[in-house]
Length: 142
Ligand SMILES: [Zn+2]
Image (tube, rainbow, N blue to C red; front, side, top):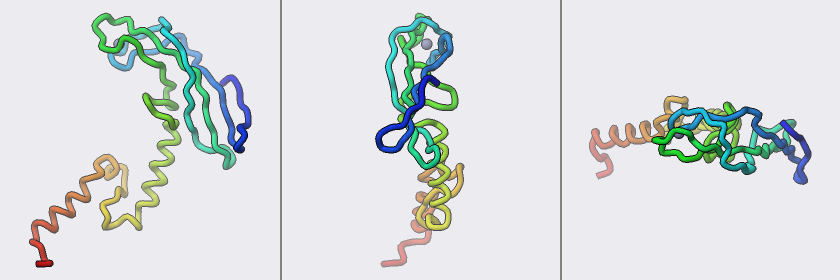
């Protein structure tokens, strides 16, 4: 972490960069420390003292040294914090998923909503099962 500041809207901004010497290519696993370029990305994280937190992360793009790898370059990720194309941190996504599961519990019964992580992994399973039951019994409305 390089810097923590307060944003205008009452939020907290954390400026950080990765300290590792390189990264493993996500396509082939080859370790690389040959830097192609760098850029800044912003990731929303969970709130701190009811204030929104943004992480401005300076990341590097590396060349993959494997000549047969389909990825010529790749961006580094921070384990446990970032994922490809994600604008929210992994802990924040986990928190939002838990909130969604809690809210979908009793109110979501009968509507095909996920009630457990297993249901969330196969979101259409409950709804299609309900359709199958209705279809198997015949259409009672005429
Ligand atoms: Zn590769």
